[in-house]
Image (cartoon, rainbow, N blue to C red; front, side):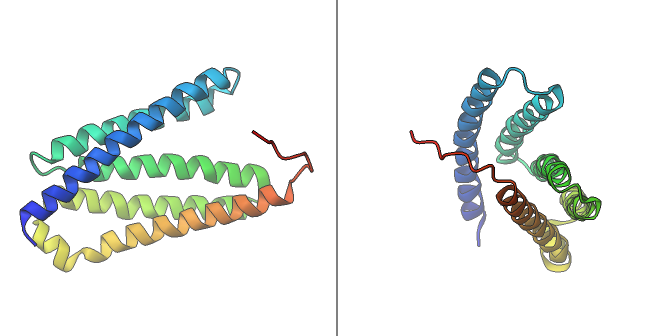
Length: 171
């Protein structure tokens, strides 16, 4: 694989990220207009996530010109923010300390692996990372996927259990 393939894929990924940031900007604006009375911590999480995503695009664009681990570190920070928010939702809906703690432990483990991988990108030769430390990236992505699956499954089951029986909306 040569550098042209890597940079071409990175460029397309960055272009898609810019498109997604545009969609997120519209969603964020709509959220603030539709829910002006939401609690301040929820509004703050939305603002932080929008800021992290905008920073992610800036880091991605910058990394097309030279190596940068900031894309990795920023992605880890964004995922930890979102997953922690949903871990709190799981705990709030279930009132089960063990379930909420399980989700939060998974979130922190994936943060550790993701942060370690991001630091390695700045301190270790990339060829060495791909040969000897690939397990760190795989552990990060696997733990992140497991956390997402536990969160999604828990919320689906909890929300299904709490159905109110109201009519479905017809648009």
